[in-house]
Image (cartoon, rainbow, N blue to C red; front, top):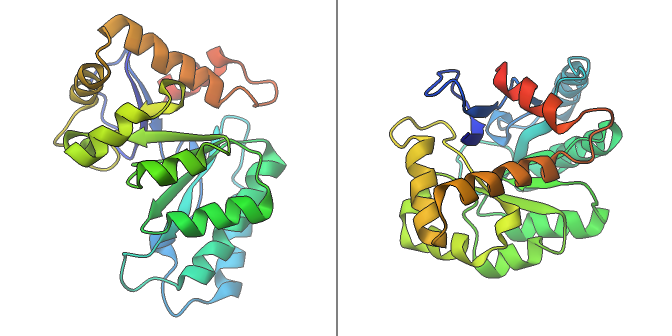
Amino acid sequence: MLIDFHTHSLDVENENDLRFVVGKNSLGIHPWELTAPFEENLYQKKFQQLKTQFHASILAIGECGLDRRRDGIAPIEMQARVLEWHMDWAKEMNRPIIIHCVKAHSDLLKILKDKKYKGKVLLHDYAGSLEEANKFLFYDCYFSFGHRLFTQARADVFKSLPVERLFLETDDQQKIKIKALYEKAQALLNIDQKSFELMIEENLASFFSDLDNISTADVINNLSSS
């Protein structure tokens, strides 16, 4: 069983695989949606409306986060404010949070430190340095890698992280399938297919272990139904 831990696609490559579909298995406001000029009242209303859509089968909050590379969106200070709304909501609902972070890892680390954040965090499509990753490990952070795993820089970071904090994802691209990512990851870690698949399944159970009244079997059923 392969697990695509962050995808925007509803297409099924293999019906036995699991897919975490962003926007279906989770709820959040992506930083790219925070257009400039930023009207806080408008987004407060949007966020409150989003919160009314929460139901028991929502497994996580997000994707939300910070992006210093994208043009035409709200300043980083406003992005941070919206991210903190999500973090408070994740704590309230006892859900992990999925974070998009581009060129803003120091900003995110400051928020985690200032809030003394205790919840589980997924840094999706992780593109920070190993030094930054080691700082994130002071928190309950997991790291998901996508097509950039085929670059030397991402591969080097991936190999250096604790295996119990790793996931793989296809995100919004279609060229590289989850099977190819599994094969690349197995080669990088020098681990056989069965052992690697089991490791990712154990990471899935760990990531969702804090959910109230939701078992690993429930998580799998929710992802299978996506």
